[in-house]
Amino acid sequence: MEYVSTGQAASDYTATINDLVTKERENPTWKREYMDAMMDTVRQQREMREAEEQGEHNARLEAARRMLAYGDPIDKIADITQLPIEEVRQLQ
Image 1 (spheres, rainbow, N blue to C red):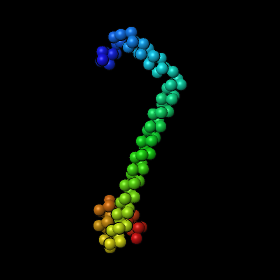
Image 2 (tube, helix red, strand yellow):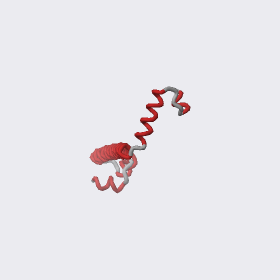
Image 3 (tube, helix red, strand yellow):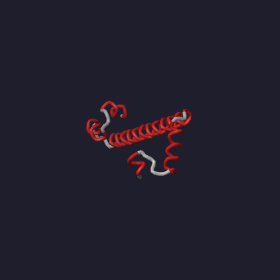
Image 4 (cartoon, rainbow, N blue to C red):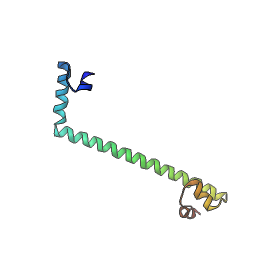
């Protein structure tokens, strides 16, 4: 715990771990692999967010289609589904 708060190794064991970590941080292969892994994580998060947004949009479209089938006015459908009026009109 002392190492975490002060950055100073309190034992030979902690010093050895610190030396190994420091050495690996300077390793260009490790740096590249680490950055690749981080970029993959960011890319996966972005893809999941985009998929979620697309799913939400599809759900709003389906709700708009059902409301159109019931004969609800376009402006009401656009307001409730938060879709642009033109997009609702295209569903007709």
